Length: 362
Image (cartoon, rainbow, N blue to C red; front, side, top):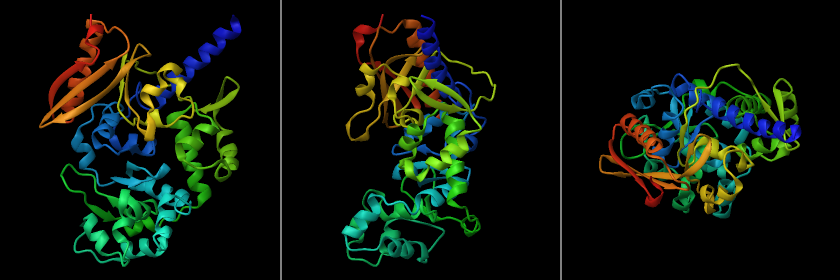
């Protein structure tokens, strides 16, 4: 029995530390600090990226995001769009620029050379400091330029290489800009950058394993294994089911909330190879869906209680919870309070919450 309880306590400790280190139960003081530490917040859906920040930053004000020129949107790990910092773009440039990815393969299938097309975008003279996707397209000298711009395409590659970012603002219509040359002039070696990335991952997502880093970064082992060994030797270790996990224990206390609402594509839902650290394996398929779709989850007292999403209806935010278990009135009031807070920070009217299994409400 001692062995079982010790293993169970390590599983619990791993979960506790991850929630704390990632800013859920021990908040960051500002948006920049959070985005920098997590090496970006995945942002296919702006709304859920903002919710990821509201969940992690003490008293976040949404203007804090749009007013900080050092915070941008750019493509990074796993060739996905993130809200990130300009400094982190330099790490991405050093680590991911030369990696082969679907964009390079696609451009070459279309008869283009990725490096040449990126140069055309980067060296073009745009009429103002910020420009549209159409402006980018018009500066590509290739008959397949429309195809090359699909799903981010060559624009995403120019961003991974550190040249172009999407301006983060609250207005309709995407605008892009060139990264300042003084940042681009700061050269960073692959070794420096990969160690920076490993350190960030261990500190903000730990306890983590080598498999987790491969999963989160999208890099195969051969690109980082020797640096992983060098970097992780300074961290504490935790063994769970025969696998070694590394973390930094900074000694801070976590301020645990019995209600945790992680939104779709939350950083914690994307970071780990093994999904059962947070939910029982019988629920995994309800959250991690086909085609890479990831649902938001509601945890009550550490237990998976259901999935949730929200819809914008004019200036209102309406929330929907699909619950697995009976939710008490007291718990529902707390969920309601939390969702009201999220709506207020997003400067939207609160449109209420609907429980999709109505019979579960006491």
